[in-house]
Length: 301
Ligand code: CP
Image (cartoon, rainbow, N blue to C red; front, top):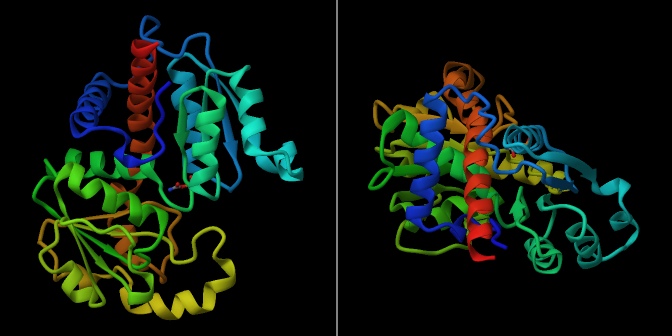
């Protein structure tokens, strides 16, 4: 089977084909077509070790709209929480369901799951990556502003977080320039010719086509709240920084948003239309991703 564990798990051509399919489906009105149910007869497990609103709802609906059924498994209620290895959990699920969407801590856990289960596995967020989010973000940019190739994306705040890493890995694939504006201690560990990092938020946003931010206190980092708020306070996405970007710059936020922290409250409300379109696109893009994954897995079997 094929998996989507990292944003690099599709080629640019494959991502483009997914996006074209998604745009087509959206134009057609996203109506359920009884003859177009690639997951018909399949059960997919959603195994989540962390809270989620967008990812959970969008995947449950995506799978059901493609004809499949879902089992939501909160890790706290599984033997996993009492020490059963991820590999054994994977071997059990692999005999009963046809695919899995997993939100967990270490990237290695999801890699182990994919290997041991033998079923298509999707990364719904690990400490290393949030590839489904970034795929939907890029689709949203292109839907609103056209091709992202050659454009400049400014990411403000925590450049060491999972969403930032997926953006950095996506940059060479889609050929956009990514500028992180972050404190040095929170720089991204992904290096490639498309990524630059600066401690100056003004420099990061200068002439940018997309301004992007993420929560400062990501899940599992609650104990560092005070240190993080102090470190990131100069990197708030606000109207002052927006004025330094291109006049037509798009503002996106992967949500949940903390007004007055990583994004100015007024700016958030001003751009809420785009930001909630971005959230809705998780559903559309994940449907495209699942179609690709299942189609690909079938072809190689
Ligand atoms: N953006 C995102 O992943 O949201 P959830 O944590 O609510 O799934």
